[in-house]
Image 1 (cartoon, helix red, strand yellow):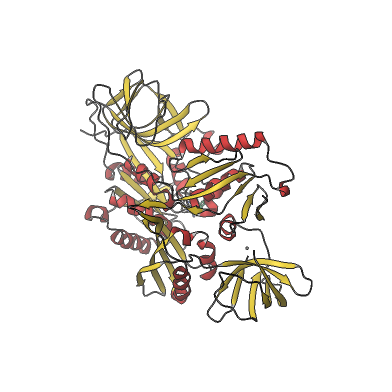
Image 2: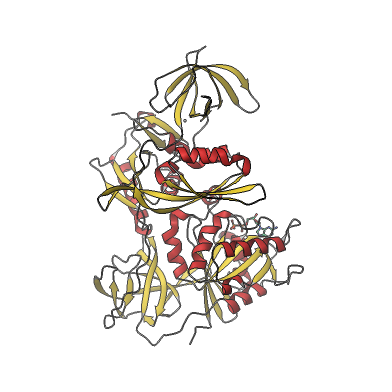
Length: 593
Ligand code: GDP
């Protein structure tokens, strides 16, 4: 017995490949959109931060109708820092829609989610989008997808994935790459035909598992998940079973289903439905809701533990022009606690100061996104350099390690190997793809990756692609982890600082400088105004413990000082400094005691 009126799918797409446009069209063509709705809100629209980062950060959900069927579409976050969340979202669905640009093909950012989806035996549907592009190369893109599926361990059924060629922008689709139909019916039909319908066991005792949280001031905490068995009715007595076995009884007062971009209150929810439930005290990801007469918890879900922590402080810097006050402090704390309501991998703990909190998260990206969001909402804060959370595992001090996968043009392999080596990375694998591209795989302490993206991008002139995902806690890496040191250049002519930057020591004792703060003295000997580069002769260097060697006279090329990105600031930050984060800028400041 199956619910033929329902399909649950997750969507996987690289930012810009047309996911939002596609879901919008599905909404419109299914009549789920009312005419005036589409103008105001686009389904799954990426926020600015997502566009800048090239990944989906926020999980969003939409439901579209096709004939007598409802199709729930869940968005998936696109980065390994959110691995637990991705797993939980995939647990709610029976199939995935992989949207790929017909010209660009599969991008590495989607690999991680796709791998999880294939591992969970979900049924894939491939949408080759933007088929209208003159440069579209659908056949090659399909071959690339097939290769990727094989590489990621797809089973035989998954390798026979259906392919729909679409032009989301025109609202058309077809099974034939040469010719588009008038609408997206082919896509609707393919989803309905290929993705398994949920099992209908509505007569059995109900089981609903919370896999995501939402929060609003009016309803409080909201648990979102899938009904795996039975039928829930408003007014029913229910038990909340926590993963540790604790049981709390309550009455179901509010349930919501999804339609279009909205949630609608419902009276009844049946096996297979994706629903939201509010009014349940302490509802948490992983909890199972079942009848008091039939207590049976579903398998635990993965919640990632934090691996990185930093201190958030009210910005009371003299540069802020005012003292941090009680109101500001309360506001920041309230904002952080709201975040904790929905973000299960985030911890916020008080410190001995009422103006400071220890904030722990999944990784640099997870915490950076929080900081960027706060900043965009108008908050001002100080944040410390992130530190990995050291744990005692079987009597040994351990730190988090990550798997790093790098795709680079051949000529950059040497420098990437060297810089990851300095960061205590161990190479696990090297594949020469034969097309001038090389894939390198490393195991690197998470510590060594803090701020590495910036260095990597400049090292590979923007051609490299880097993906990393948490591996495990392993014994502390010995010795210095990290590749670069900071420096300020002081002009010998004027005695004034001319810029500040990162110094990287290359073999010959040459210093390579990029934007970041210890004093070096040098003299500007050349200036390339077009590239904004300065060439500096280092004549005197302040004693620097982490510099291994340098000649007295070295040539330094540096970019002119500019505003730091958050990643740079977090990496360059020393123990005696903090990053001042305001809506206008991100700066490094010396700590004032
Ligand atoms: P998302 O980041 O994956 O949600 O992508 P969007 O839906 O925002 O689309 C990114 C860009 O691609 C936008 O400029 C769209 O207009 C464009 N786009 C989306 N679908 C198509 C398509 O089928 N053909 C063409 N030529 N452009 C498209």
